[in-house]
Length: 226
Image (cartoon, rainbow, N blue to C red):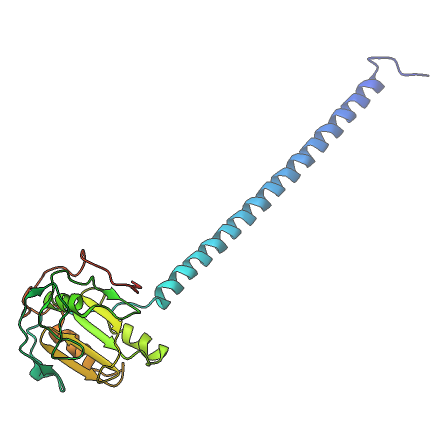
């Protein structure tokens, strides 16, 4: 006998069907919730890993990036405090012609009215412009082009970030020569502690003709690296 519409049998079947649908929907809902939690967890973990990786890169870059040496500046330029420093009595005036200098490399004297912008050069720079930078308190660090890359890297680590010119120079009397205005030091090695002593005493010295004048805003020579 077929159950009639509205009979208790039909009503029970409808309830079971509805209950089964609700159960299925709840199961699907719970599955979606679990997937969502899992995806959020994966996203959080992935994001944390990315943040850690970025921090690690920043720290590594900070640690490995060479830092410029730090000197107080403004010394009196007292040569007697450093063994081996030579001093001179060059005068200062502006010229438009090439100059034959008493010292090699030059450590003062007549010079071009345009100073050389301070920085690192991998080519020889014009003497007349570099000497003008010395007049402003910069230190001109010259090296024999034959020194090793490791020696050059060690030398660069001794340099401040401003008021210094680094360049190769053919025919200098020592592997490395540091020149300030009317003062010069020859060293055989970039590890010589007198390099730091020279910067401490002569870098941005108060006894240069144009103390506090800038070392930027003029001319770059070919081969400027930084």
